[in-house]
Length: 124
Image (cartoon, rainbow, N blue to C red):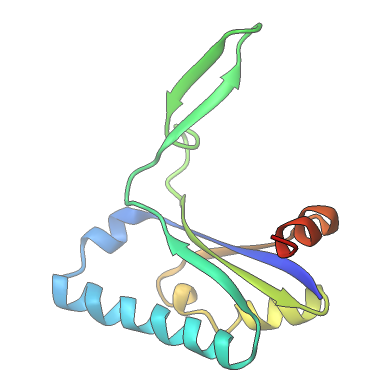
């Protein structure tokens, strides 16, 4: 079965506006979503990323150029991911439709993992 990344993008400023109690309530929704993926035998792994934009490295004529954030002009950051197994893109998209990420205007990008990489990682 193919593996797919469900890449979760959002504006972390919205998350920061929530009270600690509301943040915990929202995290429980994501945990329940992960449990539903496990019950359907789709889940492989998932992680929430830290609430900061990270660093971007680019090749600047043979020299590494390091900058903050994904892109200075964007407000959406990659905030986490789910790695799932599904028979095809349609099934992966259907699995993503149940994610609570939609409730606050987040974006989910569904990408297939290269089959050779996927096969190599499952042999470990």
